[in-house]
Length: 116
Length: 114
Image (cartoon, rainbow over all chains, first blue to last red):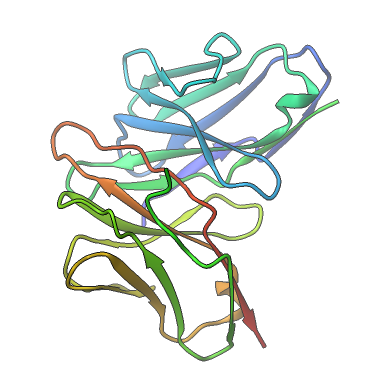
């Protein structure tokens, strides 16, 4: 299957700092990538849809100025959590959609963010 | 509103077939049924999807009822590594125009018993 690489897998930072998470599709081009957040014992919640070369579409209740998304190429999308606070601690997961024929989302391994 | 209903948990003996049910009684004609699973602390893994015909791949089989109101994911010979949360998702697929987002419910926590 297709491979989506997410980096870093775990990050611990101080409150007030910014953290960047990278999501790469390694063996296919992805015009659309997605960012999810998952709190402990809960399901995945979509944060935003990222389209290459255009602005991301954010879900209701997600602050676009706090969660900056950049999708500058067909293989790379980044999520930057700006001025992180302890309540931003969560499991962040990206996915990339492969092609129009199969319409399958492939997911990265996730990034566990801990804000102290 | 939830589009699918799944049992919250199931157990299955190692080596036996695991049958995971999903109800999607309000599914519309252009909605596909997708199955993903999430092993603890990892990203979800695609398993299989289908529209109305039964599907099989190297991981599992998907059986969709004739009225499409329910489906069953079958893992033919469950192993301990199949312990995970399994998500059944219905989703509109619109070729050439992008697709409806994946909406994850609470899924079924499948535990494979040695």
